[in-house]
Structure formats: structure tokens, C-alpha cells
Length: 165
Image (cartoon, rainbow, N blue to C red; front, side):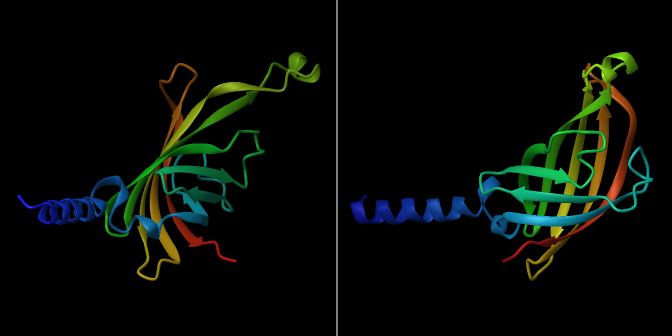
């Protein structure tokens, strides 16, 4: 085989692989910062009518999410991963730690909020053709400190817009 044709073949394979798997297709459509309104129709979060999530979807397939309720009760942001399912359609899975107040006497003396488990969110995202918004469905699963399913899980719908300068 000639060297030139081997290089050409290698380039063709590399370009072809760039459009497949976790790094390909319309992956760039989701990369960036997003602000979303989320409404749960069931579960512990269903009574909240003004829930908002802010996301950063990183090029490496990781994500960070924070909500306007992260301080009630105090919880850290959620961290997770995402992947392309098909053009302009993505799946994300992210988790956060849940907290509960310590015993009343301990809380008064400064023990604060203690770990109580974690939440796992799985989100199916469809980005609009113009890339400026998306709709999603979210499945929330609550887990106790032992990692076993707990009460409070539910489903939600989300609507997001991409943040711009």
C-alpha cells in the first residue's frame, strides 16, 4: 500500500469516528451554560412551582447543575455525565447529596445539616433546531444513606434556554 493512500485512509477513519460515540454528531449543540425551568408532576419536588436549574455541559461529557433551591435545605451542586443519543438528543445523569438537620439539641450547638442520602436525576434532552433552547423529561430517584431507594422520587418536564453574552 502506498504511504499517501494509508494516510488518506487513516484520515477518513478518524473523520468518520469523530461523528460517532460520545464525541460526535451534534454534541456541540449542548455544550455551554443553560438556564431551565423545571416542574415535577410527582414526588417530593412536585409542590415547588418556581424550580430552576442552571447547567454547564462540558465538552468532555461531564456536567455541573445547581438549582435556586440549593440552600433549602443546603445541598451542594449536582455533578454528572452526559452523552449524545442521536442528533440534537442527549441523555444526562447527575447526582447531588441530600441533607437533613441534625437532632434539635445538636443543631442548636452548631452541628448543622447532616448527610441523608443522595438524589439521582436522569434527563432526556432535545435541543431545538436553532440550538438556543431545549425541552427535557427528568426522572428523579431518591436514595437513602445506604444507597437504597427512598420515598420522594418523581418525574418532571424542563424547558431551557442557552445563556449568551
